[in-house]
Image 1 (cartoon, one colour):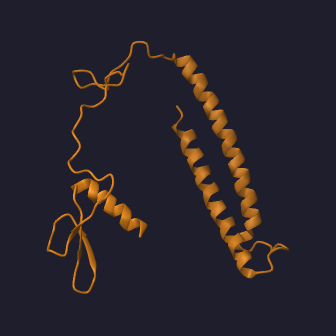
Image 2 (cartoon, one colour):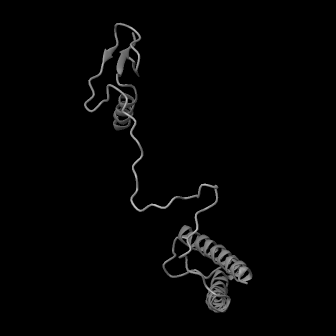
Image 3 (cartoon, one colour):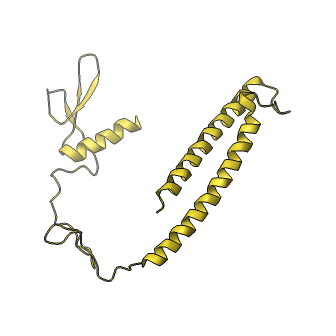
Length: 162
């Protein structure tokens, strides 16, 4: 019912007038056109009777143009540049961080595989119900897949460093 009211409100705002028409069986139809004498105009508060006026876009103060007159992206002479030695140092730091993260994820993956035990993990004391055990096995499998994806992504990221 709330959905119908929301749709009616949207339709009324879009077209200005909304009619409800009933057929011989009592089925109601909502439309923006009066189809017969049994159609009644709905009075919807907040409904627009005419389309809104088009206004000019708002100007953003201190905004820079996205492109220059020639169609090329705008560049700033004040944009900070990093020399090659500084960039190399940053890349080395990034590589070290990613390698540490990779080692951590590989250790996590090994622990998850050991717990998974090739699809036959040991049942825990709180898993009296077999469905609970199966849910934990499925969760372990999902975790292994996610960790494998992380390892692969980290390896790709390390390979992309210059």
